[in-house]
Length: 134
Image 1 (cartoon, one colour):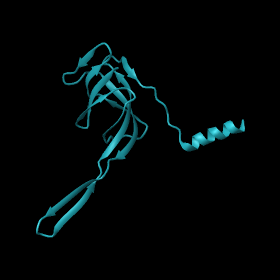
Image 2 (cartoon, one colour):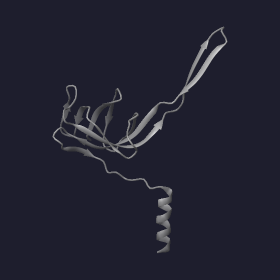
Image 3 (tube, one colour):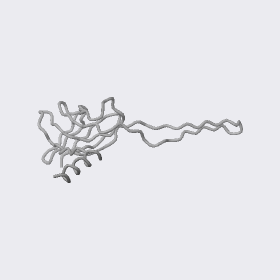
Image 4 (tube, rainbow, N blue to C red):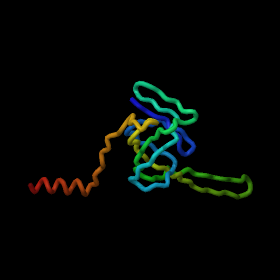
């Protein structure tokens, strides 16, 4: 199984095709294709290529599924014996992506995902009504 290690948002991720993961927030619209050029390692079934520090010309393509917020982390400051307290909450923003392609430095596709589009409830109901009428 082919995989790659990419770096984005100050973190490194091991990705393979069809994998869904949450990374630091990206400035892109939902449904857009995002390219990651900072590929640190490429591995297919036959060979492994390690970058120095990155593999030149290799890219990983992903589709942006959603921009979400993490759960609330409470930040509480208290100064003892001073009747001073402060309570804040923080929700970190994330982008949920699905890896679609892993490309080697010569443009050869190492791995490609089969994308299945999700249908909304209304679309499914319309299809069922059409089948019932026929």
